[in-house]
Length: 114
Length: 260
Image 1 (cartoon, rainbow over the protein chains, first blue to last red):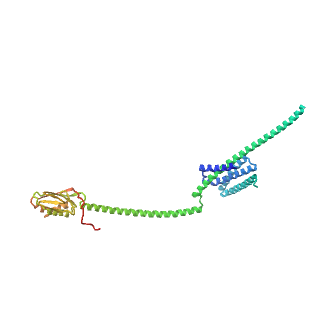
Image 2 (image 1 turned 180 degrees about the vertical axis):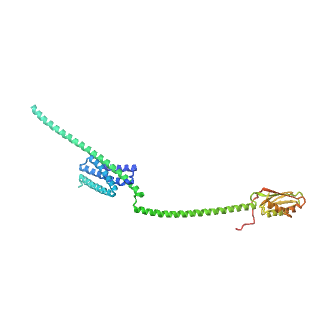
């Protein structure tokens, strides 16, 4: 678990060091993609605790989640419903919270706090 | 007996073999799990690295958008435009005001310069009249010969008076500049002016319009006629385009004081 927090911190540090900003027209795309990636990661942690984790599924899910998120935003922009990205935001948001809830419950159970 | 022993021995071997196989499988499982765990951690680490990086990039991009005009709503933009327009108008007013002030200042400076120039011209004229400056210009030179020493100071007073009447601006007698306070004195055939005395030969230089000056001296019954009636006296008038009259020192006034 500590390694994962460290990895997140390292990613943030890398971002701070490289001084890269997302261009304005890409903001929604990258924002939803970040949510998707976050969903995949929390899902990965959950799966590893449930011992159903396979790296292939994780990588595949990670990539398809991000691509699908971007695709939804793109489609929304194209068909004049640019608020469609909200659907992706809500879906991924719910899943992230769901995953985090399960992870928390599993961790509690493993440590015997429940 | 050996058969029994062998059988017993074979049973133990079998048992050992099963045991070792089980241990092998267990260790294989452990290796497999730890390998699996490593892959799990590695993929999660990579995923989270990416998430962190993207988060920061997104944060930055969002910051620049909210600061730029593109990220503002139409209402905000309208307000901004209005504010800028008002500011523009007031700035324009200020520009006009400042330009007016610049014009005023320029006019002021011009008039001041004019006054200064006028004052300078006046001062120069006054210095010329007072005899403080070397003066040069067209004029006449009057050469008077008096070998018998018959001329008196009042003859020179009359001569100078005639020259001034003719418009002389600067006059010198034998290189001595005359000013408003100069007076002639002397006696016994000598004429003194400004503390220096002369006799026999006099040279009077006067700056002014030469024809006027000459006329002032040569009028019928004028000063030349008067002077030449004295025995031995000769008066010769020369017109020159460039007469130079020396300067004299500034007088020290003891009693007079200007009223402001």
